[in-house]
Amino acid sequence: MRRLALRVLSLAVLVALLQVPIGMLLDRAPFPERDAVDEGLRGTADILYFGDSVLASGYGSDLDRRSIAAMLNEQLPGHSVTLVQYAGYELEIYRAFVEYASRQPRRPRAVIVPINLRSLGPGWPFSFPLDQARLTWGDVIGLGYHRPRSTFRWTPLTRRPVPPSFPNEADRWTYHYVFPLAEEHPRLRALKDLIGTCRKSGIVPIVYVTPINVAKGARLAGSDFAAQVAREAAVCRAVGASVNEEVLDLSAFVPEEADFEAVEHLLERGRRKVAGELARVVRKKLSP
Image 1: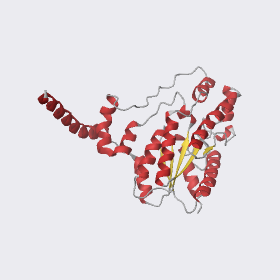
Image 2: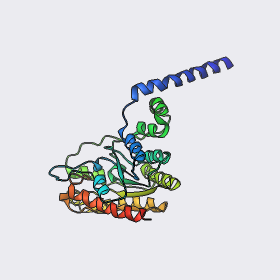
Image 3: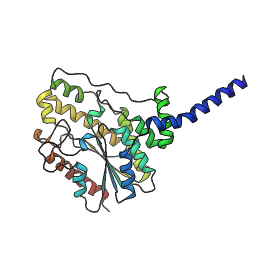
Image 4: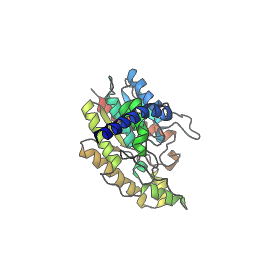
């Protein structure tokens, strides 16, 4: 029996050792978002601004096609903002990035974290367990063991459904935005963890709810749309309040339908307005 146990243990060790080069070979890829954090903290950046596709550059007929982060950087002389953005990013991956930044020799003074309400709904199809593993454990361990962890479900992974097709645009907006939201949502728990990491590391968290095209939503999905968005934003604020942190509600901050490219993607005037409000908050929170 003892001999069998030693053989099983030896086999497990061999498999573990082989998994590292296999993972590095199969899953290794550039990680420009982590590189952006590293480069910013090696340089002059004192603010990391995380975001999803809403933080992308301009659309359509925009003359100023810069991102909100670039516009914000312009309004904050004496500070340097580094954008860490990828389409589909959400609070769980932001938590991993903040934990990663907190372990660096030079930490940011502040992080800006948006809450895209759609990412809390039933149809958000994105999660980033591999990126989280690389940020948490480094490439050798993260890449080496992500594949068996996900294959054999050794850790819980968020798997979200692909949104269904909709007979009309009103149903699509309702599906993505009109849903019950509780403070116990896993991604809101990730927000609490993120704020806790900031507190322990001396980093100032600046958290806000992403603006939504409330005017179009109300026109398409009914008058209750704006009230539902406000209720969901209130839950996010309550989560912040539970850990003594303000969550800035910008969900209805851009009221004009014409300032949006889509549901949350902002045209030039909307991006500039959000950048101005964030600049005000940054100056207030980082003032000597």
